[in-house]
Image (cartoon, rainbow, N blue to C red):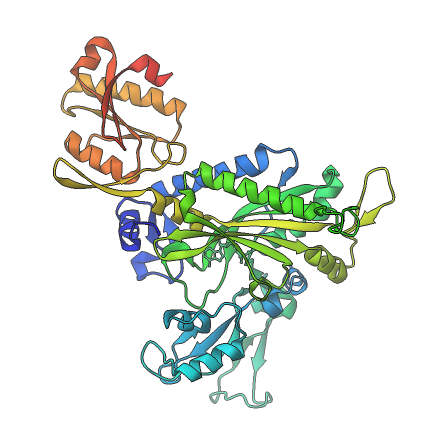
Length: 488
Ligand code: GAP
C-alpha cells in the first residue's frame, strides 16, 4: 500500500492550490471538487498524455467531444434508467441514508457479488446498525443519474384551482404549478461512453475506417453517489477518458477456441490492456502497486461479458483505478432497436454487414490523479528538518522550472532572472514559475511541495559568466549550468 496518508495529500492539495472543496465559501457541496491553478495543469498533463498515447500516436483512433446532455432515449436504450442503481438503506430513526454495501464493508463484510436481499439478510443476521447505532431499513434501489429538464418546460404552468381534486388553495389565491413535459427530461451523463456510441454511425459515415477502430472521448461524467467519499476518489462530478474499440463479432471472425485461436475481440482486449500498462508506466506509477482483477460475472456491469479492473494501492487501500470491458454489441444493438436506425458496418468491397462488438477501456481522471499524487508524495529530512516533496515525473509536474534571483532587492539580478524566466517560458509555456518570495531555502521547500523538478537561481556569478545554479528536487543537488545549454 502507498506510504502517503490521505489527510496529508488532501492538506497539501488545498494548501498549495491543487484541489479545493467545491463551493467551499458556502460550506461546500458534498462530492464536488474544484481544481486550483496547479491541479488544472496536473490534470491537463495527465489527460494530454492519455490523448497522445491512445489517440494521436495511433492511426486507428478517432476523437469526439459529445454533448453532456443527451436525448433521454439514450439512457433508456443503454439500460441506465432501469439498472444504473446502487442499494440504499436508511437509519429508521434519523433517516440518514447509506449505501448498503458500504455499511457492510465498514463492518468488515465483503458485499461483492451479493444481491440486495442477501445484503439485507446479512445486516439482520449480524445485527449491523447504522453508524448512529440505530436499526437500518430494508434496502431499495437508488438510481444514480442526475435528472434535469431541457428547455422552458416549466413555463407551461397550470392553474391549481378548486376544481383540482385534493388541492388546498387559500381563499382568494390562485396557485400555479409547473407542468413538466415528460419528453423534456434529460440526465447529466453518468458515463462518456454513450456519447461515443451515439456517434458511431456519424464517424463511420464521415471516415469509413477499417475495422478494428476506436472512438475516444474525454469529459465530465456525473453520478449522484449515495456516499461520495475518499477525497476525489468517489465524487458526484468527475472526468472520464474512454474508448470504444469496435471489432468484428466472434461469430464472423473465422477464429475458433477449439483450434486454439483467440477471437479478434480477445486480441483487441489484450492489446488495450497492454497499452493501459504502458500508460500507467508513463505516469511513473510503481508497478508493485498495480494489480489486475478479472471481475467475476456477478460483479460485472449489466453490459459486460468480461471485465478486467486495474486496481491500485491507494492510501485508502486497494481500489479500482480503471476498467476494461468487453461490451459485446449490447449498446449498438440497443441503439438500433430503439432508434430504428441501422448500426451495421459493411466490410469495404463486400456485402458483409454486422453490428460490431466493442472493447471499452474506461479511465477516471480523478483516480489516475490520486494515484499519481500518492505515488509521488514523499517525506524526508534535510538539515534536520522534515521536508515534503512530490517526486512527479517532469512531464507531469505542473511547474517544470522555478526561476529566482538570489536577492530580490538587486535590480541587476532581477533583470537577468526575468530574462531567463521569459526565455524558459517561451519554450515551456505555462510551466515556469517566477518565485522571489522569502529566502532561497523557503523557495526550495515551496517548490518541492508542488513537485517542481528544477529551481533555477540567478546570482552574481551569472552576471559574469552566464551560468546559473540549478537545484534538483529529488536529490537537492545543485549544479552550475551554462544558461545557453539550459534554455536550448
Ligand atoms: N463506461 C464504463 C464506465 O463508466 P465505470 O466502472 O462505472 O465504467 C469507469 O467507471 C471509471 O470511472 C472507474 O474505473 C473510475 O476510474 C471512474 N469513476 C467511476 N465512478 C466514479 C466516481 N464516483 N468518482 C470518480 N471516479 C469515478
